[in-house]
Image (cartoon, rainbow, N blue to C red; front, side):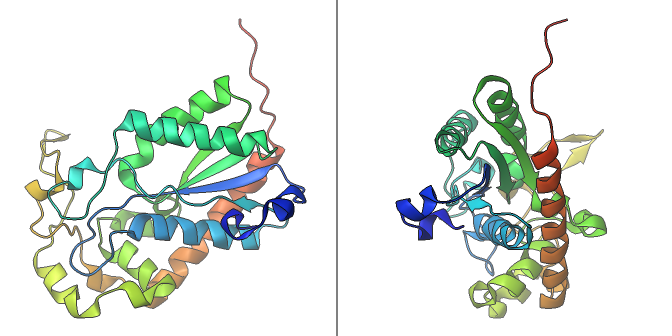
Length: 245
């Protein structure tokens, strides 16, 4: 059930303790992909998994602004601090749990959110009346994950399959020309760069031309399968906390 599309009386009739909370960002994705790429992709995975899962699942509206200050030099990028982001996610999960949807998978589409989500999910599980687990879709697509850049082959392929109308195909060549090969400037296993503008001319990392619609279809299928498997594990997990030893 899509919570945003339901009435409160329809929501009241839902017999489940499961919810999916898509989170992403509003940030630059090169000259060819929309600012909303991350939350659009997260929402698409959440919707597909909810449809594929055997039992009913509530899909909450997406959190559309995340931890994205690393893209601040590119116009249109929005960001909040990690503290604000964690607090917002935690309070949103608490409101879901208030209605009985107390097993929540946070479906993430932005790399900058990963560390904050792992921390806040642990805090929710230890201290609140809910069990929360973060899931980042591009980490759950098998061998494809090694090609994850930024507005590169994976994200472009995914969008071409799910929201092809939003990809500026006439800008893909310029996206390729201004892209970097990798994320950051690495010396002795340490990234010296903090902002993406330090190493990519137009915000792109990787070659978006390597991400066609067929690949996007496979990515959505793999991410959906992974998320459905995770939902089954979350459903059966004993979430009582260990006693002090």
